[in-house]
Length: 585
Image (cartoon, rainbow, N blue to C red; front, top):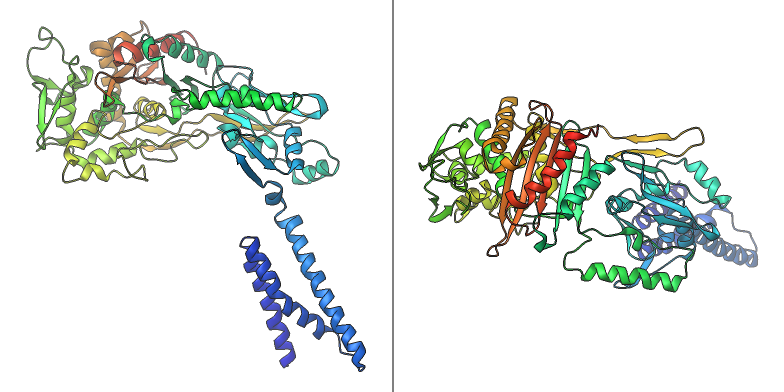
């Protein structure tokens, strides 16, 4: 009885030690493995009765020790060859980060370069990222369209790693996800190259080119036309265009396995160093990674908050002599915003007039001037509803999270608005798109799209589907389903806010965006940067043939570009003129 209990305890001890070791690093595993050795030896000795002769007992005990070592070696091999085989194969060590020198298993590197990596297609079926089989059975990554190439990211497995879609969807593109595991094992045994799956994007290549050219040919060339343009399908959230300037060429980062290795290393390093030293930071895709104060475009959020809570209507009057004092700090209208006295001689402006003329004082008063102020809680609530601070606003493409407060690790933290010292001032400044507010162009496109589609927040997406190449026709592995992040205002509020955007174009500073026979609503923004005379230029718009059911939401931003009416608006109009003449459905 005692022997059975002892054996059971030994088995439990072995199992516990092996389990504990399997959950840690190599050092813990080896310690637990050797810790299990005495229990394994005990079980081996206990399993066979000892012979009568002393010399035979010694041989048997020695055999037990050798068998124990055999079991330990077998367990170690099982772990290395099965349980941690992938991790062992994928181990790398960076030797020189600046030059991209990395050492890894040469077999892994060889297999990586022979993998027939999946293609990435735009909405028209044209390749964004392609592959070419070169000599020796190796595969070269190519990016044939300069207008869409950088949206794929870059592929540099042996130098700088992967980035963007090439990284986020690496397992799909290499076949590690979506493929038949049994077929993969057969291909591996037969030394056949792995074949990846294809991504299909929502990007319309013609519209992408139009948006890119609108950025390149901006009306303020002095800043290099650094900026971004985003076009969303209002009804689905599909990203139809997502252009940034400057941009990088991923084909200059992808290696050619058939070329001279030293020459390739020097070529890629030279291009990479040029990207790193470029003051314009071309590796930053500004449409999704750039964070900026949005200026007066953000008055759209404050307008919605005022309308939806019932605090204000479009006809609510505000006293605006050009300034307002809030919490011992003076907020002022921008120098060029107030309409001429011949147009509006009085200092009383309605909410809609404040919106169309982009008056900071009207919106600062609405948000923070007692006794009828929206206040910090209401402003924070509606800002949050529009997706600011939401890390999952867009899940299928790298997106910086917009934020209200600086100096916090959590972009959803809006406590700065509640500060007893400067909270009221931040509420006022946030209401007209300044303060500590930092947003992406994608975020502002989502805000416009939310107003356009009746108050539901669309989740933007750029990957429309994933397919597996097959002889009888591609097999669909994934197809995107448009997703709403929730209704954040009443349909009546959305209709009123939408009409305010139309009024801004019909009667306000955004009148340059009007297109005959085409419904366009918009809001300009000229965001202060903290540097005297330097402003970010913004314009958000909704557009379509039916003013009650717009099709597109557009955002254009130029970094340090100047006034919204003079730079971002004309670029956005070029995009909208094209949309009015073409269908991208």
